[in-house]
Image (tube, rainbow, N blue to C red; front, side):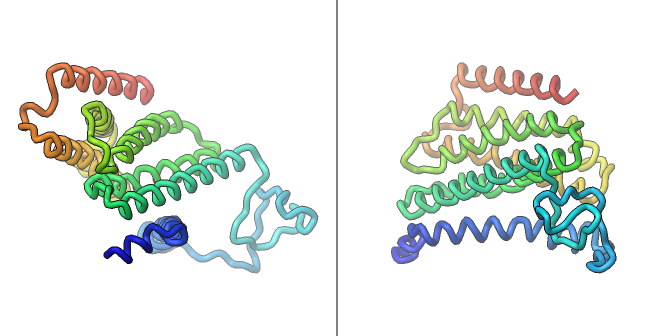
Length: 268
């Protein structure tokens, strides 16, 4: 076990783990979920007969022009939207890589809270969905749902940052951290329940991929409520009725109501 921890502490191992996770996620998303499950009946593109009149060919320089376009595995135009998509992707990759390094370091030091690691694993789907959603918004110039998604992305990021802070056993879980995580995830469930969950999950009024997507949102939210409460209660040796003081409970209630009202005003 000690040798394994030493191996995990190596910078090369941290790079390899981060790299493998970043490679696996898009492959599972596009290569399996989309191409094998969601739309398996789509025909492959002909490499010899295809053309694309929407490509500016700038990144190919003088080698190709819009009148002479052959098959490419990837096309992109030199636009502001492409730059934003690249920036979002790089920020996401770097944040994920640094998170993997941080978690491996905590594991090597013996300070990793595995319950919080479990919550971060559950957070992969919401954050990956946000990244993919923003790429599609800018790629399609479709911004109707942009502000809607932005509210969930920002609050999800705040919740995840708090959970990352709670990953170290050296740091006690504070009531402020608990209130922050609870309020955000309660609001996600309330707004999501009023927005899509009730209709698509309970009434089964929606496509299969929509129900699976919503389950991928609501399950992490539920665990982000239950697990922090149990972890805080256990670390403090508190009874269930004394997890939060009256003042802290009022703070939780006010923050939850405030976020809910803010979310509903944004999502109109």
